[in-house]
Image 1 (tube, rainbow, N blue to C red):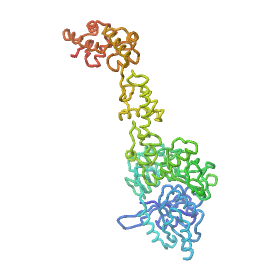
Image 2: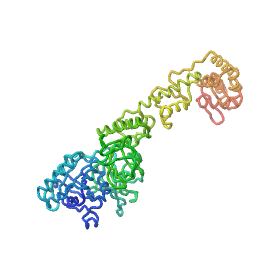
Image 3: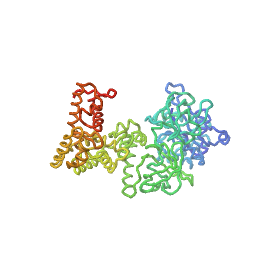
Image 4: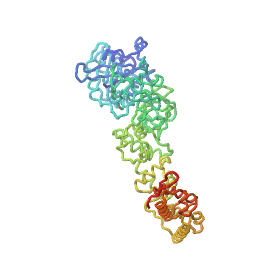
Length: 630
């Protein structure tokens, strides 16, 4: 199935043509049928190849032509990539013909058919003139080479030729891409008794299956897909590019009015600010002044414009396009590549539109140089979009930020986790990072550690907080700094040891004075091997600094039993041997007996026994301990 929107001036015969092609009345409301005026969107479908094994089904979205209902027209055209532009032979190219064509162009519609209707009301010469004038008007638009078919919906003349051209259109136009990111902009929502809420729209970006969970985007309630219909028939899977009705469980009708969208929650960002390339229509200017309405999909929200450099002007000698930052009053589920239309609220006139280039732009920097750099970045983004290179977009997104969550990067550029996986990025915790940023942050960390080692040569490691602060100074988000250190450790650039960090080639070399203090401290500990004086007192007497004591602990030459209790390492080994000898001769030992064996005090005996328990040298059985052989 392919979806085609009808566009054109009011009363040029769009609904009549759809009725003649499909046998279905597209006008859904009695008022529309009584007045002969399409007010809201109409829907109908037909098989262009009846009886053939490979059907070519086309679903029409009939758009209102009156200027008062351009908002409804935009809701129908926002998700459609194929168009049937209708121009009446008796009136020719009219204001809404022009505005509808401009809107289709702004939305990126490049494939369509043009029907010159009401040929039964004019002579052949007038029809031929209408064809020539329409061809002139289409020059420079996305439909410049579209086939033009004279037709009469009333008499049926030209209908078969139109069917043939439509068949060629739906056969040869590129199929909507399935990138695994379904999104359906809601154009209708209603309730069916016993079934619940149903939403309809044109599905793009990916397939939807019965049983999966969808959310009201960008951050609304979630519900299970209870059922799917296409063209009135149940289906298990709906493919992108088709008209779909989705029956959603656990979602109220009021949560999904026209203008909302449904899709997978983790695939879309709530976008309240983005950067785009905007294009102004002739005579228009897209600047910061004025009140704007932005139309995207079926949504319409108030917006503010902030040009990045000069504003886009339709008559500018440099061209009608320019980069712009756009702020929305309400967030929408947008991604790079999405198109939109801008209308001025006061005059309710279409003045331009554009394409989203960055759905999650960085903090805006002021100044001419910053604007020029940003404009260059956006131009590169646009080239990647035109080439369909989502991997390059992921890399650009992450490079600009240093690191990002994979789901955020994929959603921002309209890509998938597969695009992130294919990008040359480094994992940093649960984030992916620009290798150059990791190297830059790592340089700062290594430099800070090296400086610390120079200033504190006796310390084997620097506090990890010092390395974290260095990473943050270099630009790494503090929330990700711990993960960065782990990555640098895995790369071999730093070594993490307990609460500290060091550069790989850092080794503590004691000075002559420090070596003397070490020897004196160890000698003092050994003088009373199992009940020495407080460690702080011995260190002070030996002239051993706090840093030296920590280094001796790190080396394992001193074993701390408590805040100010420590033994020499060889005293621990001696204690183990003595206790084992007593165990062999006496059997299991109580804590009191162990204290006596070592000729120490309870203050030392209990923490020493607990240490031996942890090392597996002793095993507690009730109030006694068995001692393993050294």
